Image (tube, rainbow, N blue to C red; front, side, top):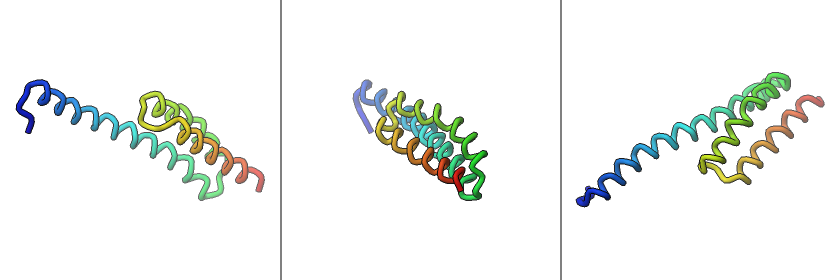
Length: 89
């Protein structure tokens, strides 16, 4: 355990920040799964609706610094490609 007051405060902040980051990361993953679930069932329309809801969540995790912008772009691109492929046939 830290002995210096500033180090104790930093440890307290780290616990709080980690809990916050875990919640945001969970929300990010849940948004991705919400798009994938209708895709597995073959419902492109529901997947497109879920995708529209997921994009702001994905972008918000980038702005908070939890996910790199390229990773977010990759997820959005792949999800969109899968939705378009499901809509085609």
